[in-house]
Image 1 (spheres, one colour):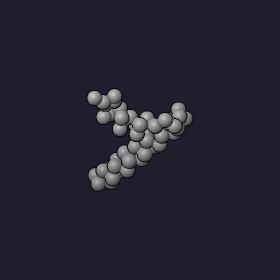
Image 2: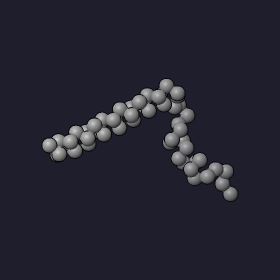
Image 3: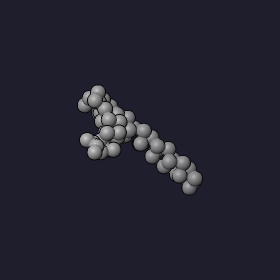
Image 4: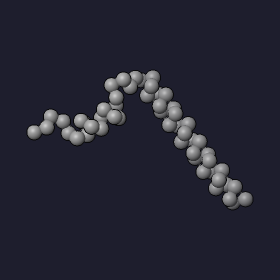
Length: 52
């Protein structure tokens, strides 16, 4: 009845847009890593200061 599954039709274009270049993927990955590291540092410092 359908040519594509729900995931292929609705989610794949969001996850992998047509104009997503390799360079932009690397920039996004670096951004995610920096944000993640900042959040972990913030939580670590908050926990460390509570101990002292």
